[in-house]
Image 1 (cartoon, rainbow, N blue to C red):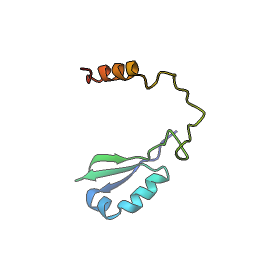
Image 2 (image 1 turned 120 degrees about the horizontal axis):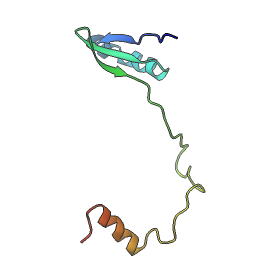
Image 3 (image 1 turned 90 degrees about the vertical axis):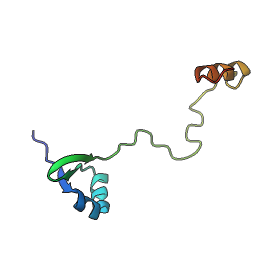
Length: 85
């Protein structure tokens, strides 16, 4: 099973064709950017791990402890971040 080689652009062509390159990457292609024939960067598609539809999309999925905003909890958090007095 052989993988297809990634398309390669020199820096000048990449700057000139950035919109086209991004479009190709959005469709799953990987692009190599080269300087003087030497690969220096790879542009790859980002994979979204969370697909939230908007605010409140986690409503009903999270439970919070009754003391989530107590003085003791806030002091413990401040201590963890080195902000305790």
